[in-house]
Length: 117
Image (cartoon, rainbow, N blue to C red):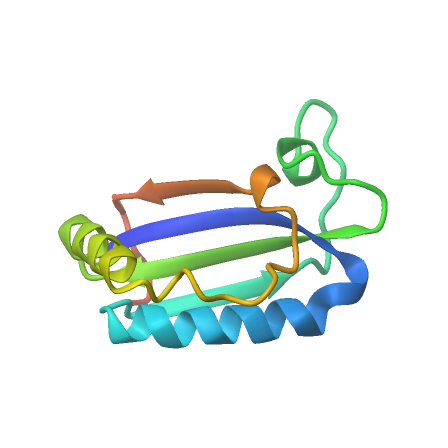
């Protein structure tokens, strides 16, 4: 199991547009081997005293935080899928991205403990 995670600032009024964009992307990722994707829209994101999700992505007034993760079989499967998706051009033809992609945070993680799966 290998996890790709993102924190994204999205305009508050674009939740439906974001969901449509995410659903389209999830269908593509599934075809290339992604096992699961969870897209989460801010419900409770408190301000921290030193750091927090908002500061991490320089969220602006009127933006909500999206927390999303993808579960892949392995790092190698994600690497191969990304290469193949770019070669196939399936990521080039997306409609307008409903958030400022320059401010998202993305990282990949190798699990060290899993409960419940």
